[in-house]
Image 1 (cartoon, rainbow, N blue to C red):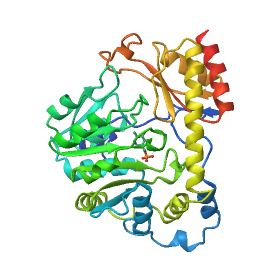
Image 2 (image 1 turned 180 degrees about the vertical axis):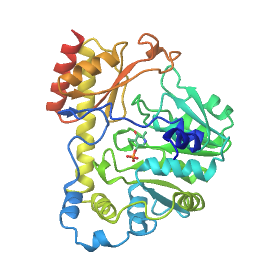
Image 3 (image 1 turned 90 degrees about the vertical axis):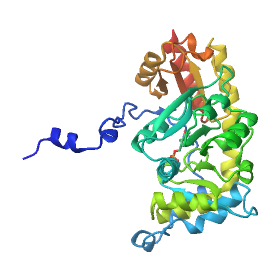
Amino acid sequence: MTTSSDVLRLARGDVSALPHLGSELAACDVDLSDNTNLWGAPPAAVRVLREAQPEALSRYPSLYSEPLRSAMLRYVGMESVAGIGIVTGCGSDDVLDSTMRTFGAPGERLAFSSPTFSMIPLLARLNGLEAVAIPLTNSFDVDADQLVGAQAKITYLCAPNNPTGTMISRAAVEYVVANASGIVLLDEAYAEFAPEVFADLLTQSERLIVARTFSKAFGLAGLRVGFGVGNTTLTRLVERARGPYKVGGLAERAVLAALEPTADGLEWVRAHAALSIANRDRLILSLRQLGLGVLPSAANFVLVPHARARELARVMRTRGVLVRPFGGFPQEISAFAESGGAALRISVGPWEMMETLINVLREALA
Ligand SMILES: *Cc1c(COP(=O)(O)O)cnc(C)c1O
C-alpha cells in the first residue's frame, strides 16, 4: 500500500509547493475581508434564481457562454468595435489562469507589480511560470520601464490595484501596452469604483486582454462569473485553454439579468457602486481622524499601513469584525517603510457597518 508521502512525491512540484488556501478568516458578523458587495446582489439576478425551472439544472449550459457575449461587450462599450471578443470563466480567476496557460509555457516569465492580487504569483507558479515582482513606485504607480524591461511573456497590471486600492496612471498603462514584449493582462476587477478604465486601449493592441468580474460591484461572487475582453483571435485561444462549460446555466441567466439596464439590474449595481464610493471617501476621513495613514483608494476597499496589522485584525475578529491583514509588502515603497511592510485591508459597505468597524478599530488601537 502506498502512503500519503508517496502521493505527495508523485505530485507535480509546482502543485505540492503551493499553499492550500486555508480559512484563517473565520466567519464574522461584519465581514470586511473580501471586497464583495456588502449591500448584496441585484434584485433582478435574485429573481432569476428564485424562478428557475428544473431544466435549468438538468441541462448543460452553453459551451462558452455565447448568450452572455453581446451584453458583456455592450457593458464595456465595445459592441460596435469590429474584431473584439469575450472569453468568460468560472470567476475572473479562471480567465487569468487560462490566459497564463494559453501564452505562458513552463519556464517563461510573468511580470507584475508588487504588491498586487495575491492569486497572481500562485497562478503563475501553478502554470510553471517564473513570477517577476517589480515594486510599485512611491506614488503607487507601476514602474513601466522596469515592467517592460523584465521581457516577460505575460505582463500583469491591476487597475485599481488590489490590495493597495490605488490607481495606476494612463501613461504607464499605455507605455506597457505599447512596449511589453508579450501579452498584457489588465485586471479591472474594481472598474466600477474607479475614476477611469482602460478598455479603450483594446483598439490599439491585439496583445491586450482586459479581465472583469461579477464578484465585486455586481454582488455575485457566489455564482463565479468573470470575463476577458480582447481581440477575437486572443479570446478564442484563451477559450481553448479554458475548456467548455465553465459558467453554469443559472449563473449565466442571473448575470444577463444583472446587465439589463433596469432599476433592479444594472442601475442597482451602478447606484450601489456610487454609494460605496461615497462611503469609502467618508471612511478615509474617519480613519485619518483616528490618526491612521490611509492610502488613496479608487476601489471599494481601503488599505491602512500599520506595523501591528496582524494583531489589530486578531483583536477585531474577537469583536465580530473581519478585516484582512497583510505583511511582507516591499519596504522600498515609502508608505510601507514605517509599517515594516504590514497593512490592513478594509472593505467598504453600508455606513452602519463602517461605524461598527471604526468603533472596534478604535478600541483595538487603544
Ligand atoms: C476579487 C478579484 C478578482 C476576481 O475574482 P473572481 O474569480 O472573479 O471572483 C480578480 N482580480 C482581482 C484583483 C480581485 O481582487
